[in-house]
Picture (cartoon, rainbow, N blue to C red):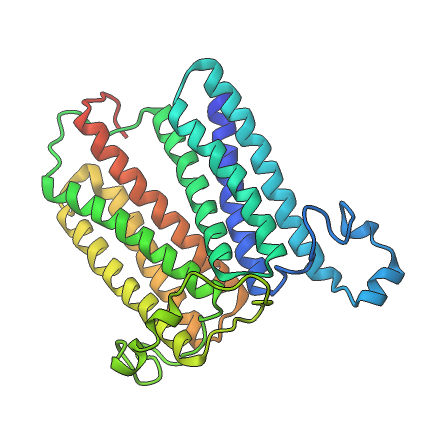
Length: 329
């Protein structure tokens, strides 16, 4: 048994879980369930908080537990990554990726602290989400590299496919950023219709006047951003840009799938991609139509994670093919 590979696989599952719990924490407004860090009202667990303190401070223990469970899972992931780093350094494998992974997990801990102490500052909340995606992506790369999976070295992959695989990776990364910004600014429900948004299909000149406000990352530290502080039109603009990004991703991934349609080596990946793509768009529409139910919203984030991993794998396989690796999937 390859202990290193097992630890990486467990870490990937745990990283996906941490992202999903983080999404649930935001959606249930539990991000400030514990206003201090790393403990909760000075304690390691919510159970240790005295009943009189809970009563005097009007503590919502459900939200406090949600926040602490998120921290426990994130802490467990950090410990696993340290163990993976130790094995990689000892075996002198993937040194650069390992250093980046360790730096990312340290910065993630800082972002987690600032998320709480800076009261859900949108830029920090978004960066914390992106840090989770980056952590998962690096772990996924380590797993792909440890299995040495690639397409048959004799397989000719068109330049068009390689280019659109890379474009898809870039656009889905941008879409994840837009999703994080939408979530951190509470801009998921300024529009209650689809495909239009308050009768707008695309941002018009009046809405675009709010662009610098809507996408300004330099918010003041101090105010409590719970519930969001942006005006209504700015939130509408954020939602419309997020939808526009979804349309662009749909087209690009669809072109990528069509370009590989008759390639038997891409068949399984194509089936997974089209299934996830349809599911993701359906979840996005349901979020609007059903007023952001927690389960569907968390699923929307999770499916976005899976789409990213498939696109990363596709790019890895393309690069592996260039390097003439011999194993096949």
